[in-house]
Length: 408
Image (cartoon, rainbow, N blue to C red; front, side, top):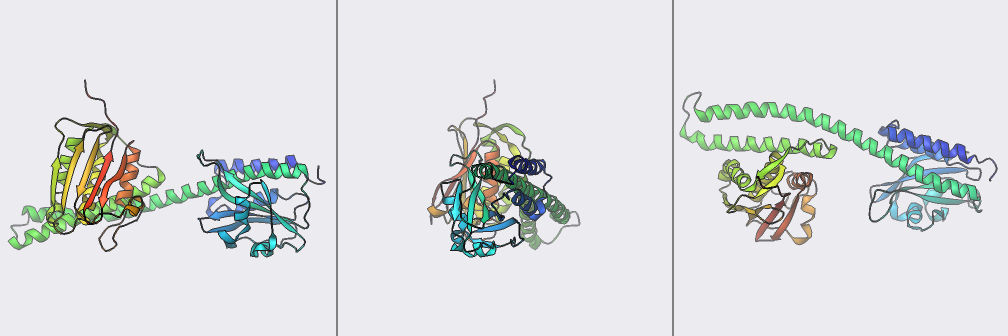
């Protein structure tokens, strides 16, 4: 055993840090830097003068989030291009412990590695039951004054330690994202509440004016009032989509699964869309199945998905949009929304379901609709996809839902 190395004490400290992170005791507000610094301290062995904990920051860079050293020369907070960083060499290397040329980048200088010294890197990986294997989250870089083989117990300690450190750091960062998500959701709840109140008042007065409660208005008011009512409805949906997107991120969307007849779903959707379709001079057709087509899903969320698909078809439908809602009694049962709009290039078929992605920024919208639709469809046990889309010819979106048992 190397002199001065207390493997049991060091591993015990690492386990304590892991337990604290899993309990949520680690403070996530600093991005895990405090935890990473403590982890680095535990990694100091007799032959290691200093160490740095680096994390992969997105996909383009690595960031030093925690450091420890016997001479205090190490500094945290530096960021390097991933492609030019020794961290990439560590992650790409097959060995658990990988020697890095310290002069290969500014990292060696920042860590105070002497010309005669060396860096030993160990990958921090977490296993998320992915078929591709453990995912790298960063690296531990050990600063040594001179190249020399690590003692067997030091090598074993570092290998075991990196597994624990990766779990602790990953858990701390995950806890931090949960806290941030909850804070964002609370904030959006307040904002949405404040937006809904004036919208509700505005909508109420428009309805009263259209009903003649304040006396019969001029004939010329009919079209403007109809447009105001439709725009208020659109704004309501936008506010709901923003809040729903935040709730989806935090997993706070409850579902009430029931048996739905998809023929009824498209009939209700066509009625709900009449005002919007009228403003856009759009034609909405429905094609029902001859028999009931039963699916098992949340009625409110399915209505939301179909409404979003109709709104997209109107937005991208060009002059006098044409839209057809149909029911497919296949297995699984499905609702199809077809249009003759601008269509979508094949390379964009997967990207259109990303948050905030929009095919044409000149057309009003938030980029939430399709993303929310796919997430809700999957939450109900179904799927939402592009069945067909050709630029200049139009698109067909397909919402598959779980089959419901036929009533006795």
